[in-house]
Every structure is written in structure tokens, then in C-alpha cells.
Length: 203
Image (cartoon, rainbow, N blue to C red; front, side, top):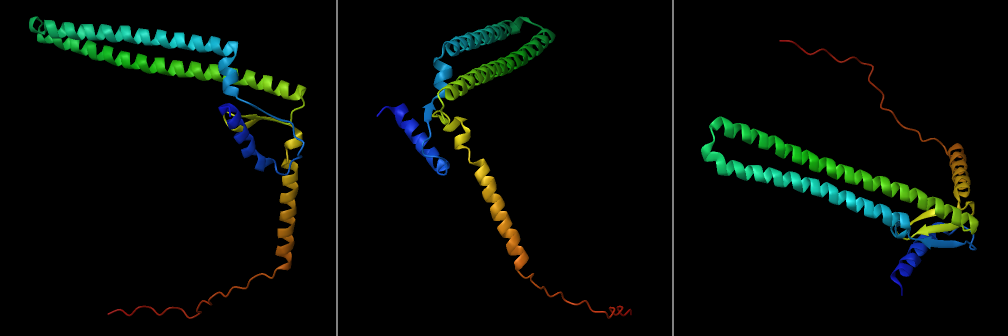
């Protein structure tokens, strides 16, 4: 059996118990929204752009690191011909440079993560619009995502929220009725002694 089909069947089967009280003539379909995003033309385009951004950021870091290593080796080579003050100044500059490279690496990582999240959110929103439109045009009741195992679209036909609210209200009324008919429990409270405590004897 096709792996994706098996996953889809399992996902729908897992959702079955949640739809036990819903009508049995539901029009259900499955979709893998991650595949939609990855395999679409726009998805491939932005994926390539992200890859180019990652390579560019990595290249800038490599250049900075190579420059740092070159200056470090030069200091080792020339250390015997430099004054203590010159060595100290060079070491301080290299320490600052290393710190700058670390900050650059952190900013590059944050930029890449932000770009990936931003692109993912945009593609997800566009995919959701397509799914909603398709479901409405084809009169679907439920579209199940095999990637996340959650529904991406559901019609009013499968929504049992109103029934559940009615059921909760019914149970609450039963509880109120039971509380009215049940006798309150009596509790015994130990009576406090009215006799004041005797003062302690003093020597």
C-alpha cells in the first residue's frame, strides 16, 4: 500500500471517534499541506531563495573567520619582533574581532530563522485559502491534513459544538435539581469553653 495513502487512512480513522455523533454521509478528503507548500512553484522559488541567503550568510562568516585566523597566525609569527605593548593591542583587537564574528553568526542565524518562518507563514496562509476555496466549491465537509494530523477545513455539518453545549446545560440542570432535593450535611462544631484560662502562677 502507498505510504502516504496508509498515513491518510490512519489519520482519518483516528479522527473517526471525534465524529461519532456527526452525520454518516460526510464528504471527507485528505491533503498534505507541507507537500503543497514544498512542491508548488512559489514554494520551490522561495526555497531556492532561502538556500541562496543561507549560502551568502555562511560565505560572509567564512570570510570573517579566515581573516581572523590569518591575523592570529601573523601575530604568532611576528610576536618575537613586536613590543609587549604592540602584542597587547593586537590581542585586544583580535578578541574584539572574535566577539564581532560571534555576534555576526548569531545575527545570521536569527535572520535565516526569521526569513524561513516568515516564508512558511505566508505559504501556509495561501495554502489554507486554496483549501478553503476548494472545499467550499466541492461541498466538502472535512479536509484532514495528513502532515499534522489535524483538520484544515470543516463545515457546519460536522460541528457538534451546539449539541455539546446543550448536553452540558442538561447536566448542569440535573446537578442543580439534585442539590435542591438533597439534605445539607450537618456538622458538629466543638463548643468553645466560656471559662477563661487561669493565669500562670508566678514564683
